Length: 236
Length: 392
Image (cartoon, rainbow over all chains, first blue to last red; front, side, top):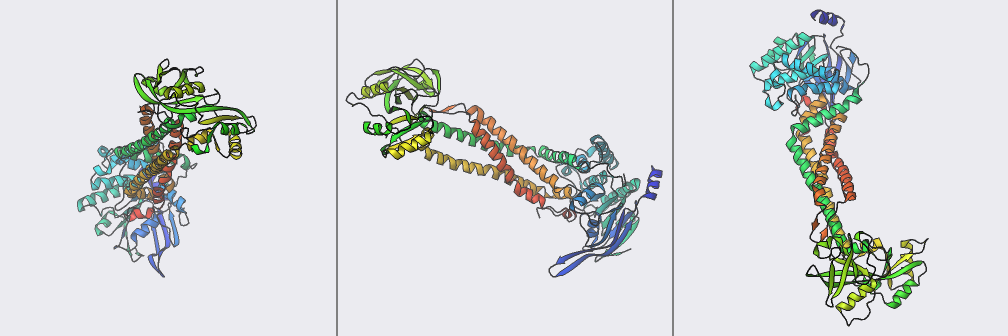
């Protein structure tokens, strides 16, 4: 497995290549530059912490990398796919199949059980048959220590358990890149550390790249590299 | 997995499965909420159908005798104001009517309300006498035969339990004229009373029995049929042009313009309009509230790649299921009640009304969901990064 992943990584394109990306929002007669000529490349199994204060543009960068926003200028290539000029429909398909998200607060569908929250990804993207999808969901939940919670609704789970289900959901479509937006902000220090350890081990065991958006300096211990962002400008 | 392209795009086939997955899972998890909505719609549909049947039964008990008799055209005197009880056709007017070209056959119809002893009880009974069998006899015979001789009558079938059963003899009071029930016909009531159809001579006998001093009774209307090539409407119009004192109406017109019928229909129309608005409003508001409540989940689904169309179709599938089950429940409640009798008003299962209301309410219910659909279409997946949803 390691050998396969290793040889795969040798031929795999970078997980993310953002080149001179700008995101500008019109504000009356003026404009607000949320991201200013950002250039960032992630290796295929690299975990990068994107560190910056509130309003620095880190969520904007993450959203552009994940196809939730389109850049005003520059190019974005994820897993070899140039998504810069994708329309809404193609971006939705890209999000189904190529990236995984763990958001800060909105993470699970409340009327689906933990297992179904993972299965819905397969329903949307349907890469595999139902049986395979169920096996994969069960395997992910087991890895995340949630086997006995698979039939629980989100309301029946603790904050840490919910975040772990969200990680499972983000991995369900075997993404090229997983984007974590403040994944520990709603958790206490201990739970936050547990979640970050889990994120690292899950990403590394799969050879999947990840961007972890945070303003918490402690997160950087769990990542391969730290990129800082201030006022929309990246600093390596 | 990485960079592995799909051999084909299965998005279309998976769309249906995904929307079924989402729609049914949510309904299962919120069974009480959706069940209550279905029950509410079911009760409203039941009320609509029941009122529809009640209206039909009410009108039939008032003018069934006109609707279900054989004459295609009834000619009233203008002064009668389209009312059998108020219309009197004099011999002169009868001659003028019968001389209009295009009439194949004409015959007198008389009507009166009499006190009749039936089943040991005295009741007010409408007696309608016809001169020619093809011009005024009941068309909805359910047992026995038509009255052909003096002293015979066909009775309203739903009055059988009140002494008007086949073979019973009823007596016109005072005078003691005995009338034997030789047949029963459905939905031939007049003025919500027990009703007897007799030959014209029997009707004349009844008038004389009740009032020996009365002169020969005048007919209430002249029933006519057109010669081949002339329509009922055409002949009625011709009579009205030719005879100023005559008011010729086709059978359907006579039913609709009988005093009171239009007022009853108008009252029910208002009730139906209100119900027709309430059902889609209830379902529309319900789905709008549900959509607002689950806006975060919908935003998340959009963020992880669910197309708007899948979410919209999932919503519409839920609306359709709720409406179908709700309408089904309403029909199931209505069906057994539709065969009952309320007082003297017999009810009947109205297949046409069931189909019409089912289609109408289903369509309006779907339309009412458009507000919720609009909200779904306005979801921006970027809101998942801010924790915002439609509710904010």
